[in-house]
Image 1 (tube, one colour):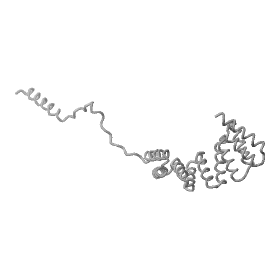
Image 2 (cartoon, helix red, strand yellow; image 1 turned 135 degrees about the vertical axis):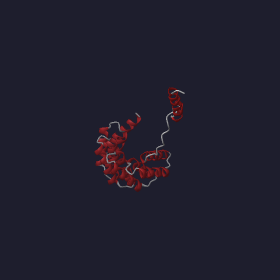
Image 3 (tube, rainbow, N blue to C red; image 1 turned 120 degrees about the vertical axis):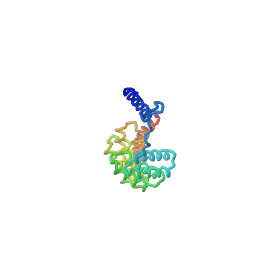
Length: 215
């Protein structure tokens, strides 16, 4: 055997032996390698629990909704929406003290949310705490000066306190903001009648009836 032939045989054997050690290319049909599963974050779990609470609330299963909102709060203690929603569920059960506590925490976390002031104002009203109710509706008006509904609700609270002039003023402002607000006319008519001004009361009742007929 010549030296040249011997070198050729050695080189060939090296190539053959090397082929067995080389990694085989991946089958394209197998797709990319699987990535390890990621665990859900507390924030994503909180969102899931919040959605579950909303679903149970839609079915008026308030106790289960409360459990889900409570779990949302455990996972995400600064979730103002969860506090507001749990307050709604307590209010639906007539547990107004618990509702007010939750609404108050929601307001602390998100002080510019007019909706929560509406909800807490309602709960105060159900307890007969009209001064607190008026304060919440006044805060809504500060946040949303063009909210005609807030003026009507505050007027109702004043009226329930036995006042007439302040309700009339609020109802009149609601009508200025929303001229087709039938309820505002009806409420103002009631306040005028309580004051003994039957002519103005009748005019407002007639206007309310006219607007209702157009709906």
